[in-house]
Length: 101
Image (cartoon, rainbow, N blue to C red):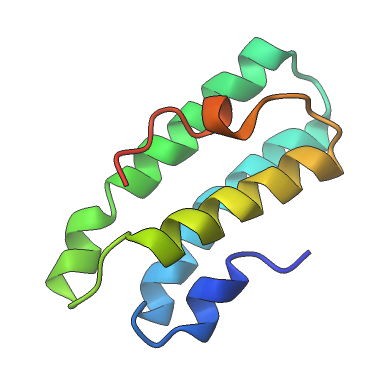
């Protein structure tokens, strides 16, 4: 599964910052791989990862970038693919409900 493909292809987003978002999504994947979760547990994990991504917004701004349309779509698409892969039935809008981007 290719994560954050559109962000990595766009020079507007510094790769080392996209790597930080990927790191948060990797944590979500590791959580899902354990398979010991219910919908409430997975939503709690999603909320943690989204809040961590929110915390990167200032760093993106300091580097002439921002979590805007392409980033929003790329992050949401990637999380959607993770949920689909692990057969987790949570609506994407609910899954990323804590986002500020």
